[in-house]
Amino acid sequence: MTSTSTNAPLVSVEGLTLAVGPGGREIVRDVSFDIAPGEMVGIVGESGSGKTQAARALMGLTPPPLVRTAGRILFEGEDLALARPARLRELRGARVGMVFQEPMTSLNPSMTIGRQLEEALALHRRELSPTARRTRVPDMLARVGIRDPQGALAAWPHEFSGGMRQRMMLASVMLLEPALLIADEPTTALDAVVQRDVLELMVGLTREHRTAVLMISHDLPMVARFTQRMVVMRHGEVKETGRTEDLLEQPKHPYTRELLQAMPRRLPARAVADEPPVVEVRNLVIDYPGRRRLFAKTAPKRALHGIDLVVRPREVVAVVGGSGSGKTTLGRAIAGLLKPGGGEILFRGRSIARSDPGWADYRLQCQMVFQDPYASLDPRMTIGQLVGEGLRLVPGMSAADKAKRVAEVLDEVGLGTAYAPRYAHQLSGGQRQRVAIARALVRRPAFVIADEPVSALDVTVRAQVLELFAELQKRHGFSCLFISHDLGVVEQVADRVVVMQDGRIVEQGTRDTVFDAPRQDYTRRLLSAIPALEPTEAGGVRLRWRFGAETALT
Image 1 (cartoon, helix red, strand yellow):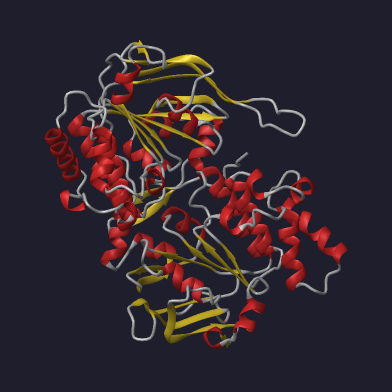
Image 2: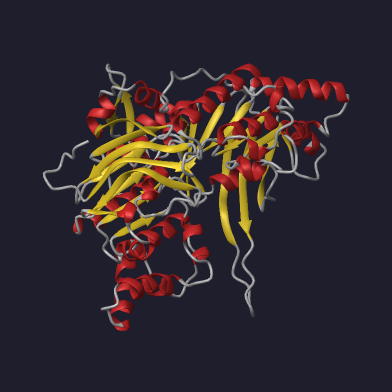
């Protein structure tokens, strides 16, 4: 593949093949692409497509079982596949930097932010004096949007949000002004506003030094916005490559079209009957207790400020907002996992406080699907036991009835009874999420709270899970509170949308009203952060910006 740039490639990957040992199974097969100075190239594909391993091979960071069996990796004319470990250590950080998916696992929890950032300068910029290093670190923190850079130097990674930690990871990489930046799913766990902030910041910093960027992601709208060229991978092979705009609008390979068709689309609005609510929240307040210090205790923090919310029968109400807006706290409070500091929650018109007679019935009728199914499924229990556990407290069900119900729900979620004796670690992410849905629905609940149920899934798997969820909701008629930061997913599934900011509801209404005619500036900023995708006649998609692509975010 040739670059669209007139410059000679900074990186050329030619026929790269990685296998599990010599003669073993090939994970990456005959992969070729190049990157010019200052160019941004995106690699997209599902989990297991080989995109991360191909990128990590550029830095010599593939796990020990993998070995290069063919191909070359040329960086500034030097074949890195033949470089000695000492030479690779010289290049890592100084010439090739990498921003990983989860900054909390990349930042050392036992070191302050200032010490971690200065350590890289001391290792790779030995010409700088200690005074120069101490000056450069807070300057870079200020440039990546850290409001108190001097204070951040003495702080620890756990004291910052995910977005702030990702900014610090970017600062640590860009301090060394590398020629190539590899960004591996850099914004997967971030909300829409923070995603755009971090990526725009990354683009601005890399343009100053004409840094080439290799972005690895399954977030097609983000790749579409920020990259000039795109590489599509599946099963370790490159299926299609070309200019990002051309590839999106006129895909040639069937797999590329499959990826694009799996993107969330707006469905026709459903008619929801104006019936008495299944769940009603009145003036709900949640306070988190202050932290204990050596000689004092910090003041409590109010997470929810008098929330009023109604969910009607068979209705899907989506809750959206930035990180820290209180949307997950709201869901956990309604599920009974947090004790309210004020207000009340009603189920079918009756209060469901723990001391009320209806509490036990509500806990049977209200179920929750968590964001990370692997963390919420007991690794010591089989799939059959995990799903059947939900029936343990249902009165009047015999063991045979419970076994029959477990088999029915496993079939409904597309797994079948063959998966009953397996364990969670033996399943893929999509299959584990199906188990989490089966576990929530095995009681045939009236109300389901889904907290970011598809945020960690690939594009095609996400589409399958959303289609399954919609089918099950139509079949069983449960109401749903759907919590998500993915506005594309919300646009597909929601009947009504609730927008939260700083623990308050700032806007709510039907999906079409909120998405097409928002009243609040915050809602418009939130919607403008992510482009919508419109289908083209050629089977591809075209970007459509809501309320202008350059709307300022605060």
